[in-house]
Amino acid sequence: MTGEEPLLTAVGLHKAYGPTAALGGADFSIRHGEIVAVMGPSGSGKSTLLHCLAGIVVPDSGSVTYRGTELTGLPDARRSELRRTDFGFVFQFGRLVPELTCLENVALPLRLGGARRKEAEAAAGEWLERLEVAGVARKRPGEISGGQGQRVAVARALVTSPRVVFADEPTGALDSLNGERVMELLTDAARFTDAAVVLVTHETRVAAYSDREVVVRDGAARDMATIR
Amino acid sequence: MSIGHTLLGLLETGPRHGYDLKRAFDDRFGHDRPLHYGQVYSTMSRLLKNGLVEVDSVESGDGPERKRYAVTDAGVTDVREWLEKPEKPEPYLQSTLYTKVVIALLTGRDAAVLLDTQRAEHLRWMRDLTERKRRGDLADQLICDHALFHLDADIRWLELTAARLGRLAEEVRK
Image (cartoon, rainbow over all chains, first blue to last red):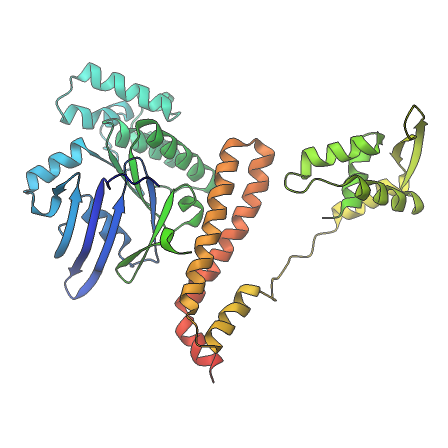
């Protein structure tokens, strides 16, 4: 690990949904280009931690700092913009737009950022090729397999060259072989673009693709790299 | 692993010298633990004595004689029987990890830290194997997967035990 400043840091995050505490003082940090697995039992607060880090959810207390900017204090519109320009997302079930072709899905984040159709689709095409799914470019999400859909989702997450990719159980709906290939492609692509990856997973075999592991238990995060 | 059966199986594909046998074994199965020459020759003497192999030819040159071994019919039968018989699954009922957890609880030490330390060590191994798998060929991938699935099972056990530590502490201190 380098002595470089963390890219994204969270300190003392608390978040409750009604009477249920999801996070109870979680700390987290990730460096440029690092792949960190967030593990923990179901309901431990892993996904809430990811949502707070990505600025999707505002914590009740605590701070999230991204490249020197405190996210929790930013207005919604600014946080949305940041998610579009600097962050990429991969979810358990691709969450592709069913009405668009796979190529249009991957080009979408670029189009939303103001890119022209031709350039956006050319970049999307390259990413589909890198993810070994160039053949599904003209198909709609309903016409492709789960494994292909996840690769398209990874392409969509990386097409904007984000600094941080948030992956929430990216292989959760795939069989072992497909899950493994998606992890290889996701981590290769992240290394290629020098993106950091926050990888939420309950599967140790998936976590083994990371550089470091953080375990969330009862809403508190513990960095396993400090355990010797 | 049964080295004798493995060498017999390799010989079934054609007669070989002791050195070739060692090389074939190491290429396919000896990734972490290559065979010693001594092991090959002691195994071949045993197989010869039991009539499972025979000396096919002897070459004498400047150095020591080089024997070429061939499998016998009895040897082929032995390989077939070995392949047909399922291996006994290892039930791991004498787990060192379980013993350590109980001793930690009995002596008032922090068993949760022990479990976390072990988990971190297991994951370190899993990372190394995952990396080796990415760089390796299909044989490497299958060998690493076998180890990865076992380490994964261990980690599940470590997690379950961590979740039951309170109850286990009450039981062992009764």
